[in-house]
Length: 204
Image (cartoon, rainbow, N blue to C red; front, side, top):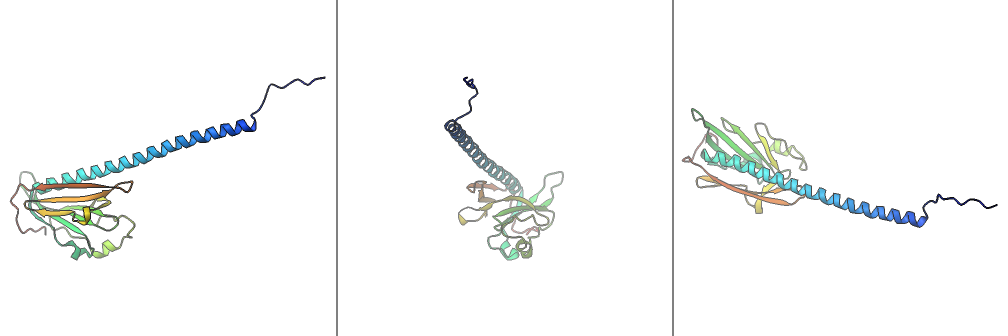
């Protein structure tokens, strides 16, 4: 008596290996596309952040410089005890019914990857102390000192120069911003005052 032949047949070992190899190839291709898209997104996001920071800094400084009645870059290395620290101080006139004097400042600190802070006050703006700058570990971003606000991180002078340079009737600036992919983008700008600049000011 003959046994009926089964119509249900499973996969052979060779077929299983072929299917697995095909699945691995597809997985590698899809994974490569995903990793590449994430890398591109990271680069684009870093470039966008740098562009936004550059635009914000350019607008902030340009608007203030146009209304400045006095401009100075006091020696901040002596007061902070940190080599490479830069301070830009402006005395500006606020718009309104009655123009009033106001102090504005930008502080560049080379520590912690390079950071930029800004401040605004009706009186002289104090520079952070040596103890404050030294209290933060070198591998961590530093929070804004009292009276200051953080403007950006990953900022360093371009070509080992200065971030801020006071020129006749104005200020120029140039710096490199470190992007998310560790590359850098150069930012530069300049602005001139519409006022007659004085040589002394209660702001500095």
